[in-house]
Length: 159
Length: 157
Image (tube, rainbow over all chains, first blue to last red; front, side):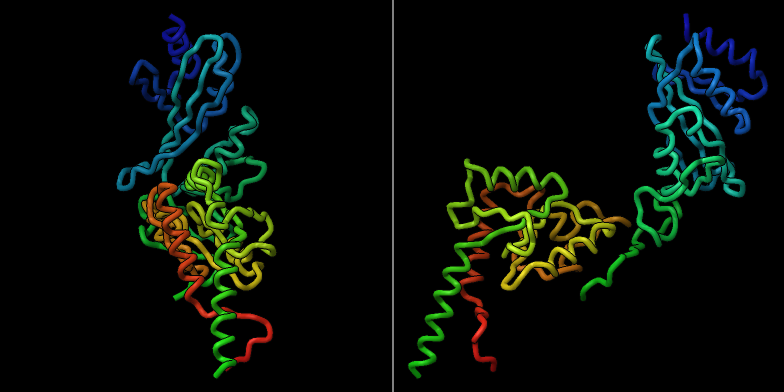
């Protein structure tokens, strides 16, 4: 099985960097260390495993837990028709991670979205600024501690 | 006495003319645009009520049809479009999102476009059926007919 092979090889190459491997809905989930993200991702993108497509990149806020944030990367291998999920835990005090823009071009806007909504900083991102919210918007709205009824209008409202 | 008779009749005639020639500007941001299209196209055909001319310039239009969710990011644009329209002008809030923000009670969405611009007719529905839109349009026409019209040489009180 191709899938088993990639996990075994990853375990051999990056032995202590991979903290946990779980399976959910038939797809492997890797929990890895933050500093080895670029190496692992580059290894997976190259042949023979060819996880050449970054399907999605997002973040989850587990408020009250430590570490609080978790980055999630969804990869897809077109020749092998297989999916793989990579997770990285991030502490609130040191909220930064390597940017994947050097590996995948589409990571640019996805990382800008995560920066906008969660405030995660991406190292070596070429253009890290808000993508959805306007200039002058304060806070990161998808964080669990963002006030539910907080409004920040750009023009004065009537009434 | 006879002067006021003519003023009243002229007011009536002007209202009659204006309500049957509503050039409209469609400001469409979301799924309500689909219902707008089906209302405007041949099957329901709101040209029967004199609303056939779609103008894609706010300077030439009388009625602003705001279809769909308006976010805070978009609010200054909508305000500018409204300001650019020439008098007389009316605003139709088309769908629940424009009326009250709808299900989007969150950080991004304006809770009803009447927080930004004055609204003349509210059409509820998510999205509203074309029948509802036509009903709202007829109500707007009644409102235009009844309201006091403005014209250039009118004597101000």
